[in-house]
Length: 160
Image (cartoon, rainbow, N blue to C red; front, top):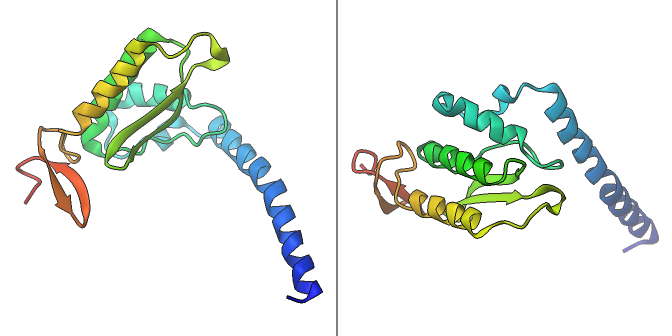
């Protein structure tokens, strides 16, 4: 590598690491303040609009406000949110998504007012278990099948 190429790569690395986190944090803050949370709701979530709007308003600072779960899991996520809000009214959401074919619901308690209680952990575990047996399209009970090399849960109507 020539000295010129080495200097160019050092410049790129330094500028990329120092500017990107600040810019993305400002972008997230800007989105949160200027956009209507209804624009960020997942598709076909009108039935759970109150719960999902509240979830998006609880997104922790620095995290993009999204709910990335299959439509069939909307009811489970909404009921989990209601249960967690009763247990800890100030809890913050870090991420809600489908990861490795399971529900990933990551929360944190602001200002360390208390630790996550066993009731909160069990509510999240129960919701994960429910998602393992609910059709990802409609939310009806189903079985795990292989769809395009991915394990997914489908009911009898959607497994065809």
